[in-house]
Image 1: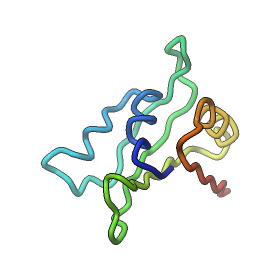
Image 2: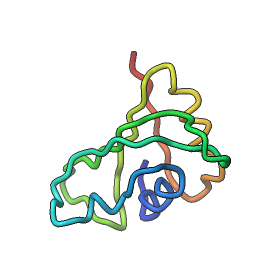
Image 3: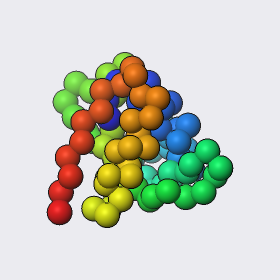
Length: 94
């Protein structure tokens, strides 16, 4: 997931605080979280990774969402809902 609003978009869908990437431990590589539906029920678990990419800036932030294979289709469906301003690239690995 990439774009200036990627962090805020994910924050609205998951239980973990995206602010953990901006704390004094700025080299934090990943966080574990759960994604919820509108009723607050868990849909899937995931790792959100902030890769150390050359020249990455907050206004062009890239985050990786890593989910279990069996949750891949559900994750893509959930992340695409209402997503009109973010670039979403997905790669499913088995």
